[in-house]
Amino acid sequence: MDNQYFSKEGLEKLKNELEERLSVLRPEIALRIKEAKEQGDLSENAEFDAAKEAQAFNEGRIEEIKNILEKAVVINHNGDKDFVQVGSTLKVQSEVGSHTYSIGAAESDPVAGFISNESPLGKAFIGRKKGEAVRVVTPKGEVEYKIVDIG
Image 1 (cartoon, one colour):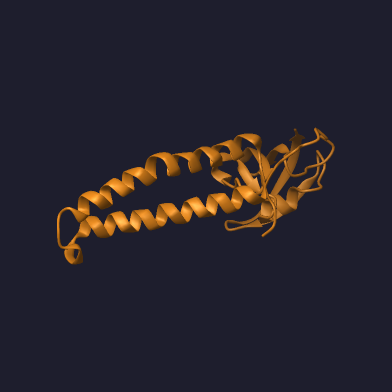
Image 2 (cartoon, helix red, strand yellow):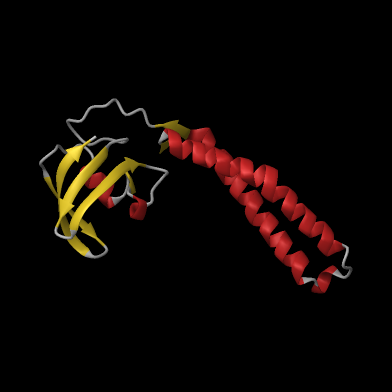
């Protein structure tokens, strides 16, 4: 597995999620399983089945987060504002308006302004300079973005 890039804040958020899953959700689910077992016949116990399913999901997510954290790299943006790179925040203009995006990898959430450097939009912006126009094929069709500012 390749390194996964995070902002300092994004990595902290992931660590907090892990702590929450370990110290809060895991004990809550264990209690639910214990209480469901005390109800008797487990073969027809929907609460037991739901608690076991929640446990499996939580444990899977814990392992997933641990694996991500092993490969996590904090984006060390060198402050170079000449071109777009992983860690850059850029302002762009398109036919539908202005947008601000932060380029990262593991924190992708386009609605919140975080795009992956591996997404079509991220790939199109990486290495580009302020003032350049970039054409990107999106699910809604081809869109042209003009890079207004790089931070």
